[in-house]
Each structure stands twice: as C-alpha cells, then as structure tokens.
Length: 121
Image 1 (spheres, rainbow, N blue to C red):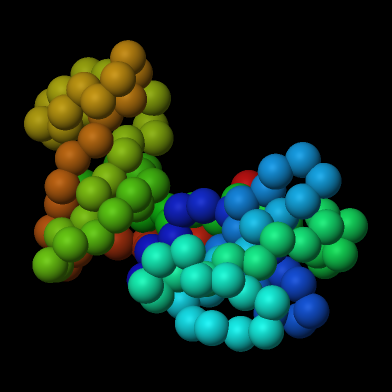
Image 2: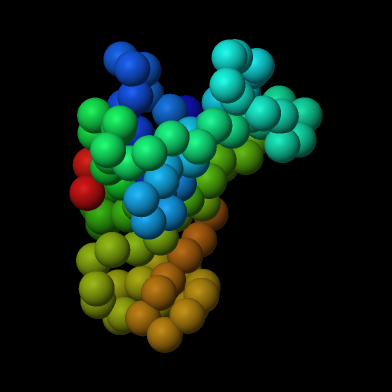
C-alpha cells in the first residue's frame, strides 16, 4: 500500500487526516462511534486539533532506474511516479510526461521499482 497525504494519531490510532485550522478531519473505512458516513466505505470525524497527538504528511518514496521518485498511485501492478531529482534532462531521457512546469510523472511496472519506503514530512 502506498500513502501520500496527512495522517493523524488520535486516541492511540492512526487515521488518514485533513487539517483545517483548529480542527482535524479523521477518516476511516468503517463505522465507529462519532464517525459519520460521507460515502460508502468512507467515514469522517472532526476533532479539535489540540486533541491530536501527532499530525504529519506521509509520502511513499522509491527509486526507479536509479532515480528518486515519490509514488502517487498504484494500479494493476503499475505505479504512478513523480520524479524528484530536479534534472529535466534526466526526466526527459526517461520518457516522463511534463505534468506541470518542472514536474515530471510517469507509470512504471511495480516490479522495476526499488527502495520503497515512507517518508514523514
């Protein structure tokens, strides 16, 4: 599983999260006390930010063809990657798409990706 987004620790558990000023929205896939269904398989609870033990941004990082990337998504054995090496000639030589100015992305077979790990920002 790859993660790219906020996480919060609240009452000893970690949740996907979305900070909003003095509050944090906590998300989980199933029902629980105080959580409201926002769509099938997605429940939310809003808590005061002061009650959250830890809030961090987590992203999955890796290397592909010896270059650094973050993992944005996964689908049927492929990973959507964003190049973080900052060298456009390298990105272009790898055949990556220019997603935005200075931002290069592409799909890579998961079997070719190495050094998968999480980074807390």
